[in-house]
Image 1 (tube, rainbow, N blue to C red):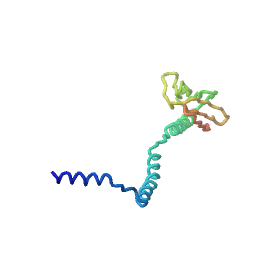
Image 2 (cartoon, rainbow, N blue to C red):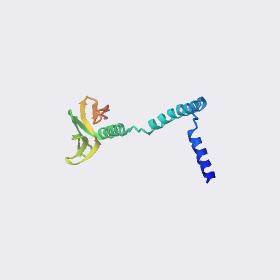
Image 3 (tube, rainbow, N blue to C red):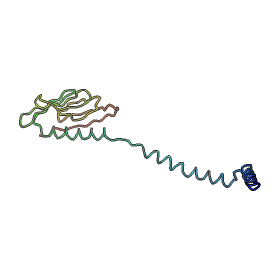
Image 4 (cartoon, one colour):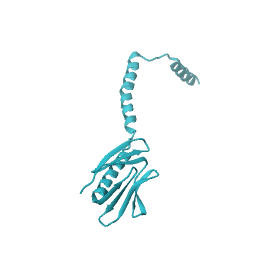
Length: 149
């Protein structure tokens, strides 16, 4: 029985010991924190992803529109639509419909060329057309498309 009491007293003395932090342990802890914080900030920043989907879809639309215009024999442009006639006498009307730009072929059905568009406007020139697109996020894109003859 005395042996158990002696062990308890030793344990209690250990708990009552007043060992504090030394200057070396404080500096060591501070150096670990200062080393890991920049790495942690970089890791958090690298997890953020900035999508280029809107920009790529607008650029792809410009490529498709340039191809449509170059293959057409006739083009008529107003503020918000372009009417193209092909060699087969098919008529394609490209215009904004709600939040997308669509192509109607011979007024039958339609194809969606690009989505999430706030504004689609055209400025006619003698040698081409200037296309202005504003996305729902507010990004503005413009391209001048030349007629080929």
